[in-house]
Image (cartoon, rainbow, N blue to C red):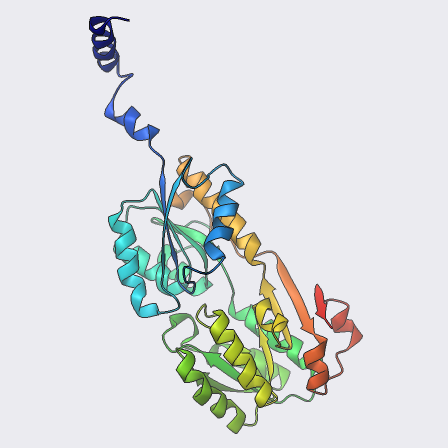
Length: 328
């Protein structure tokens, strides 16, 4: 085709709207910004989330551009990292935890935000209605007070003589600011007293466990704060609990696998897959307000019999029979 003909074709297409800046913009790969609050660059979480997106055809570097930041469990860094990502003008912002959800909502009112996952309280605060979210925030809840209460109930089944439980909470986490008060009714019904112990980092764990041991607790409930789920934190929590002969119960199965007594946890791979579905729908035109916030529907009960034996506990068959996994 001659040069004049090519120019004429381009001009003609521009005149008909077939060749426009919008068409060029649509040809670019959409950008997904991800902030992982508890993870570092060596964590497998980003690759797991990438895999979930790839199952829906969103392959990093081919059909989508994924940019990630890591807070490594430092909540103080979250607002700054969110600001960095917002400045990149992504098509969707994906993060998790109540702290990051609030920071993201404060940083942008226009970029769609998918939270996968966080506690119910911050998501309700930001959206007004879980079933009909208002604004640019949607996503999935991770854990509720009821789930923590259920874990305490399972402890009582495993150890009927337990009378006191320590509650390990991060003082920087708004979701657990009112613990154990929010659990008092359930704990009282179970015949359990509770004592709060705080730790915001590795250095605070020793004092927290000294407080729990000094109160003669039988177990420690590790709240679902992402900072506690970092490998270095999990290892130290298990070490301190073992030294004090405390049963560790939680909503994260990694604690049980590494030496805790039991957990009733949300299935994280299921969370990642559902988050990918939300991102997929938004990239295909849905608005955040079109997508109701989902509660987790897949839970795993895990019991560590080795730990039970070390603590002198005989786990009833009724509890073992309900477990999805028993570690022996």
